[in-house]
Structures are given as C-alpha cells and as structure tokens.
Length: 175
Image 1: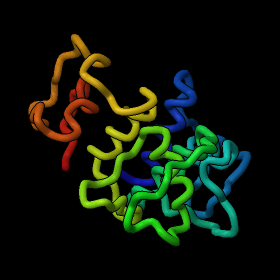
Image 2 (image 1 turned 90 degrees about the horizontal axis):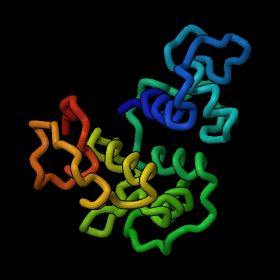
Image 3 (image 1 turned 60 degrees about the vertical axis):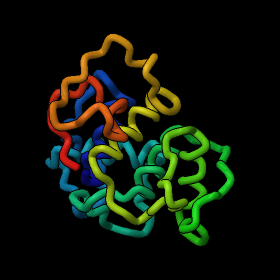
Image 4 (image 1 turned 90 degrees about the vertical axis):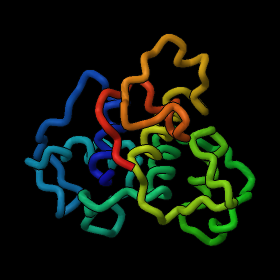
C-alpha cells in the first residue's frame, strides 16, 4: 500500500461522509498537486498533525508505506500517550519507536514471533487490513466480533493469520 492510499483510508475513516476533492487553497508538498486524487486527504492529515510537512517539500505519495509510518500515523491520529514496554529487538534508536510502542500498547500491532517489529519493512495489504481492523475495534479482532459475518475472500484461507481481520472484504488482497 502506498503512503497516499493509507492516508486516504485514514481520511475516510475520520470523515466518513466526505470524499477527497481538489482544494487548491494550500499545498504542503511539491509532489502532490492540487488536482491529485489524494490531495485533500494529505492536506487533512497535515492539518490534523498525522503527518508533518516539516522541512521536506516532498512526501513521495506513491512510495510504499512502512510499518513504522503506519504506526506513527495511527498513533498521531489518536494522540495516544501511553507506550508499551519495548520488547522488540529492532526498535532501539529508531526515530519512530515511541509511536510504534504507543500503537502496540493500543493493541494495533503485535510484532513478529522472532521478537522483531521490522519498522522499515514495507507493509502488505494483510498487515494494513489487520492493523486497521484492530484500530477500529480497539484491539485484536475476535470470533465474537464477527459472528454471523460471511467470509467472502476465496484467496484467504480461514487458517491464515489475517483471516479474522479480512472477514467481509470482497476483493482479493495480495500477499
């Protein structure tokens, strides 16, 4: 998933009755023109403090989203203040470690069985869907939460680690 796609998903979650439309009043990044489909969502994210225009003139909207970027945006969107204890072997000294640990504390991320978080790894659609489901539901999705929902993805077996989070989606999610 790209940065602009994820920002647009967050925009739609926080503004369910509003789709992004071109709003040329402000342009925080030189690589996102006012007529770009994601322009309003990106400007909303800057205004909301979810992303920082800072000193960089570019956001590189088409670049793949990393796990650290996703955690940082979610933590900023909710202004989470409490961080989990760092039990990951690869977060020490990482610029977004505090945001990651806040997202872990909120139940959005669990990390990997080998004790890593892999902050600079790009996200898969499964990871994004799972993180967003946990974000919306306030923690891991359980069987009780989805009781009665039909599992419609034919390419995601019920034994897949992301199966609970993808219940109800009707389009294939590539690994």
